[in-house]
Length: 282
Ligand SMILES: Nc1ncnc2c1ncn2[C@@H]1O[C@H](COP(=O)(O)OP(=O)(O)O)[C@@H](O)[C@H]1O
Image 1 (cartoon, rainbow, N blue to C red):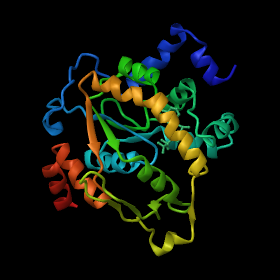
Image 2 (cartoon, helix red, strand yellow):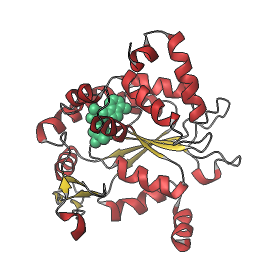
Image 3 (tube, helix red, strand yellow):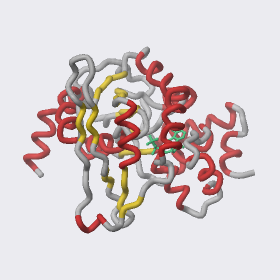
Image 4 (cartoon, protein in one colour):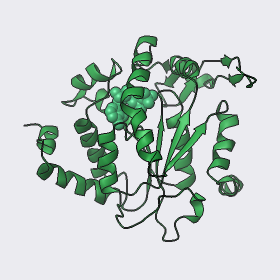
């Protein structure tokens, strides 16, 4: 029996050690009651790091903003999409199975995602109570329930963009095969409707060193992106409601590219002073 099947053999008895692991690794605090959206920096006098989640459709920029915030707070950015791609690139036992799922825009099973997450946490990337910013997890109600059982999430940021912008952004996404840098060659310009301003997103072009080494994700084709969007609406949209009902969801409509959106996001999170201090000491 492989590790994933062993972990999940279908019953709570088998699942509970996995939950314990996850809770230890994520520094769970069952007793805290943080279901409010106050200024994040004043929320934690005890020194507990932020426990935040990024939700949003494919291509919305979860990775970009989660990574920036994790640097700001000094907590790990955990992207399940990255964990899946790492496993795919390895010659591990799951690689072939994952390729068939991811390359068709489907979701990996909750069981496999949990096993990848636990494997990542076991390798010590996240220290107890240090906090983390999760990106791309949870993506199903089941994942959200599991997470709720093991750690207290303080805030869930739901990034939003119009569907035509999402599609253009996914199709324009490029990664430097050498340094791993993320770029976007799409130039998005969508006419505003009903008196709304036009939506403009400038390309994020690579430096000369990376320009000849760009690759496109296999799942960033038009057909697969449309399927990922459909799956998001079916499986992941309910997760928004899950957190909305708990008073933890912060909706954030991206006003444009990173230069316009980042300062507005910091404002929405009440983090402007914090970023100023960090920039000043950089
Ligand atoms: N929490 C998850 N549950 C199930 N599948 C996941 C999860 N996170 C990532 N994946 C798989 O990895 C792929 C890439 O994830 P990600 O990089 O987060 O993509 P996206 O740009 O679609 O948000 C997804 O399409 C899905 O197949």
